[in-house]
Image (cartoon, rainbow, N blue to C red; front, side, top):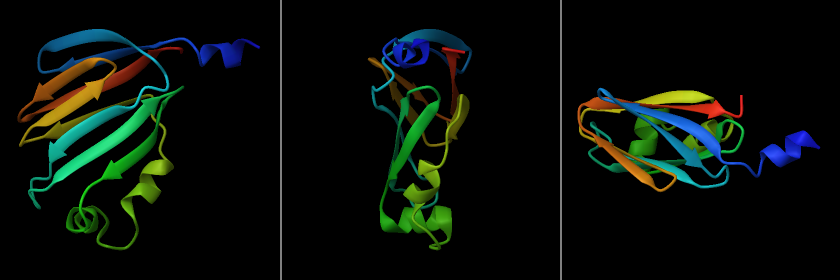
Length: 121
């Protein structure tokens, strides 16, 4: 019964950006988002995900031209994202990037944000 109980506890997530680092407690079913402007199409992109056991349940929202840019028009971008699960990842943008995770928001320009689930192990 220990595994199902882990679902109820908040996740401990580290966030690194620039020279800064913080730790957050985030509910596992809280939707998190990364927002940025695609540097080629100049259109907004939103990637949502949840920190259930890993970062997963990824979805990308953008316009058709930007989706085609990422996939060469050969498949829907959401199809690829649904298969991904990661314990950590880094997202970078030259035009600016926003991360909404838990009740916190982080912004960077010409830099990267790295997030990692520290607990549960």
